Image (tube, rainbow, N blue to C red):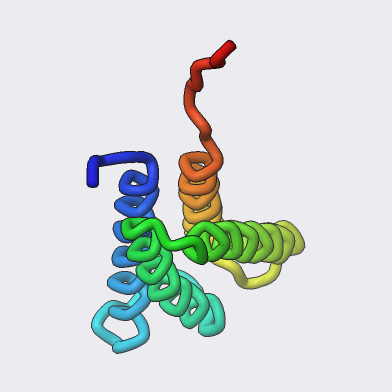
Length: 127
């Protein structure tokens, strides 16, 4: 199978998933201590979605129909969590700015993944 937009989307999903698991997992295991306030639920969410991202990446690589749906679900979840964190941050709750920015990054990455999947490319019109 040749390299295509599904492979590109898959590579992005796999990289972001692995990074989320590595970063969040090291904090969960106590290997890394952050100097900013860490929200335990957000940490668990990020690691969980890291594993879900790996599943989506593998599905995209093999072009499984469910993987596109999973990519959209991940995008929507990250978007909602970003908005929630942003609102908490704006109202002065204990949310680290870096957490808000990391979720914005994840949301943008999954928007790129979705765009790769939705892009149809140039097609020739047959008359």
